[in-house]
Amino acid sequence: MAVHVVRSGENLWSIAKTYGVSIKSIVDVNGLPSTSLIIPGLALYIPDQQPIIRYYQIKAGDTLWRLALQFRTSVSSIVSANPGLDPNRLYIGQNINIPSPVKHSFPHLDSSYLAPLKPF
Image (cartoon, rainbow, N blue to C red):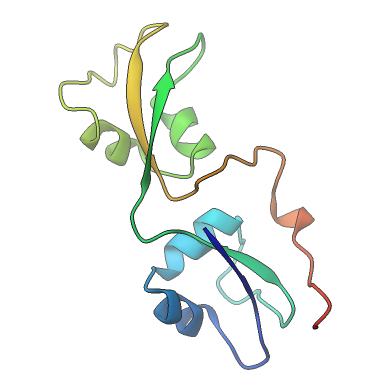
């Protein structure tokens, strides 16, 4: 995963085109509340073009919806990555694949922690 520092005059469309990723993937990975809320100096995580496949063992209370939120993916992507998986019958200890656009999980990171960096 790359980090891109927004420069004056850039927008999400130009940044996404530069890296060959979708605007939605940048918004999702960074937890941006809007596609128009970027400012010069803001550091953005740029997801890899191909999703990373994580191996995950189901724990008590897990649902596909919660896992999709945690790993910034969708329920349909998880189901597609696990042929034969019954999304209504997860069991503790079950191993599944989770495609995710991020290499690392940052559960404590949300948009309130994103701040502009000083230019070099």
